[in-house]
Image (cartoon, rainbow, N blue to C red; front, side, top):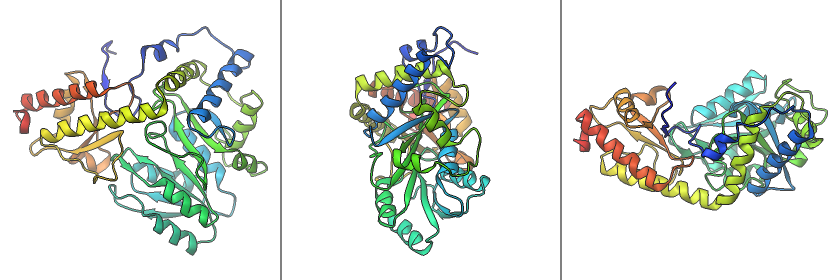
Length: 369
């Protein structure tokens, strides 16, 4: 394992601050002691406060990757005998489908291409045709391509039809504007190691309290990922299982640093990062895969230049200290991804562009020659 510090251009885990990493080095602490529950309470309260939904929502923490929180929300939200409508326009929409079906939840799918946001009217038509649907699940930011879905508009359509929404905001919460407590939204999932700029190992569900309370008495589909069980325990300053104590220390520090920067300023920094990156890459001849108007400010998928293979580009960039990310599935053949979340700044992104220029020159490809 190299001691070299990499500039991470993958969509999480992201580059963190020195103080967040140092927060991991803490005295050993039993997870049943009041000192731990003080820390857990600070994290839970900080999440809903910074997400702008304090009072109406509660944060429920899980030790696990982001998929743990997503699976907990999906498996817990849909009552027996009801159906889930899933928007699938990327790898993570497909994961929502696979999670629901793994738990035996009847599922209706609205499928689109990987660069096509869901039209909210399609959701409305599907809900009108299928009264047995109780919830809509969709991904806010599909890191498959950097696509944004119009979750606010979908939530309004769902609410008008008397349905509730589960949002996978894993890579967008605190990095893109998102009204967590919008009418229709019951559950929003995310994790510590994306735009929060913490360490991998903690994910969470921001749940509307009325929806969380309504889960009481519903037969659980999972033991570990029973959302109501975790909610009830954490509300009582308790935990049903052993959490990642040290990772939660780092998460608390990351929350404090987010509060100091401000959510709006972090969103604006990411947007400027993306602007600098895209302008510089355009000058090198790269095209963005996702149409303008549907792009996030967190990740960009670029088409590979003619004669350029991803593996060669990855290795050339890594040799310069930068870790880029392959496309998923078939996308890998013709495109690659560059994220700009974490502690990165516009100045850092200018350095990223120069590293691409030097890499292309070394590979004798395109505008870098």
